[in-house]
Image 1 (tube, rainbow, N blue to C red):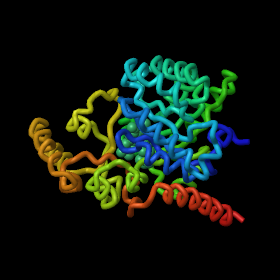
Image 2: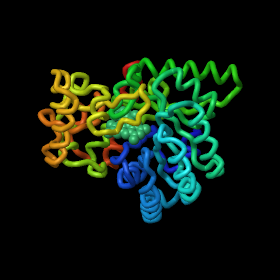
Image 3: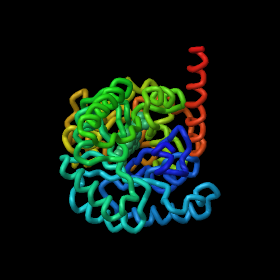
Image 4: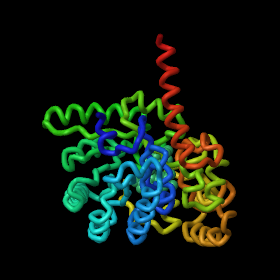
Length: 355
Ligand SMILES: Cc1cc2nc3c(=O)[nH]c(=O)nc-3n(C[C@H](O)[C@H](O)[C@H](O)COP(=O)(O)O)c2cc1C
């Protein structure tokens, strides 16, 4: 049996993963993705104060779900955390991980490898290895270093098109993924260590993107931006509408530190920036508006509710270059099933072309 099928027995192939998105991917989204045979992640980010209630909600949903209730030995969601948040977050998380034993923890954005090793070892210790270790990486170097240091079960290889945070300097998934794969094959052969399963992320919005990364030999793919346009995502209508309206994402989005600075979320390691839809905050900044005035206008925009988002507004709208392919709001379960089945169809079509 395939390793992922063995570890996450409720999932269906090809594996569709709902990426953790801080304050957005909470239990409703994670449950919906997992109920549809995907793997839903709940984002804790740098604050686990609501994590227990979220995992309680998952347990309750699992008990009543015709599909998930068959898999009583596993809590069928994962939890995403920001490793840069440090020791305090780790210590607050461990009792929760020990109690609920989610199927995986998704570690992201460490200040240094030592922190990742600590999260890995401690998570494995308190959950007796039940909670699998996923680490999101954005470069070949990170992939090699973290694999050697942590023996992760899964690496999520994040390409430059990804929405939200990612390495400021990066490559698109089509170049990054095979290079990571080759480097890990070499490393694992040389060192006689286990090669992690590789999941692709960044720019996958539909079955075509899914098929493309499966063709790169990804074991599955994670989507963030696409799920923003689902009712289960915990975002304002204005944010959701701005995502659906945006098109031509290479032109309409940018990876920048500006949006974090305006929001005051400035704890990220310097190598990261957040990709979001361009708006007046960005164009005014580019045209020389002082940061102080920009932030004052941002605070004003926060009071406008849904009107605060959009091309001609100011609020941060984290989303990837694939926004132009996100054209309507659909339930997360429908997205999961459609993308999975369309990816299959695409690969069949390709196989037919080669006959
Ligand atoms: C709005 C938003 C918030 C995100 N928040 C997180 C997060 O809290 N933790 C994390 O590891 N990744 C986060 N990401 C990145 C995702 O893990 C993933 O790499 C990305 O969404 C994949 O690219 P896509 O947006 O093109 O699907 C976020 C992405 C978006 C769009």
